[in-house]
Image (cartoon, helix red, strand yellow):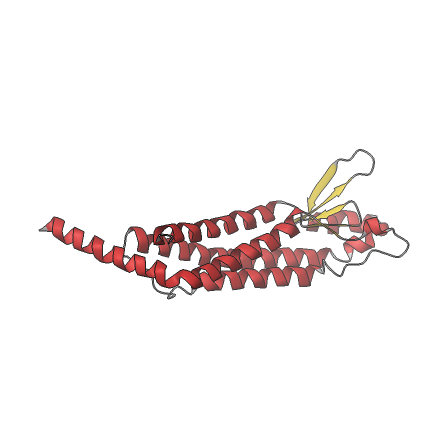
Length: 212
């Protein structure tokens, strides 16, 4: 039988993995559209057909500079606002998810290591709230960015369709980790909390013995 301490450690590792996955998503491109345009959370990068060099800029820079001057990229300019909103929504909701996740981790560590100190304000609901918040952030991103419904202009080859990049893949990987973490805690919650309560009583007794 797996000791409760190991189960607590596994829960913490699942949460940490989720945290780093989502942080990575902020920094890399989510998908590619119209072959040379790579869309991230806060920026759009364009790869030159000539020298292969990327020109990276915030969405606003493309709206102000590229779109008024290059009518041929209407497929990009028509969707920039949606991509910008999708990125903002994803960052905001995942930030809230991280707050609940960190709260749950701190609560778990305090209960297991410092024993009698408990942050039971949420009654452990934070372990279920953060996967739900992340799921909502992913749904909002996919819906607002229209990543699965974007269509290339007529007469363009299939190479100009949407192509998933690392960021979009990691979004679904992070979703699986968040759901596994929530389900894992729900399944082992009695053993985890039972260990914390026993450890808390033992620590409390030890401190009183030392005082005597």
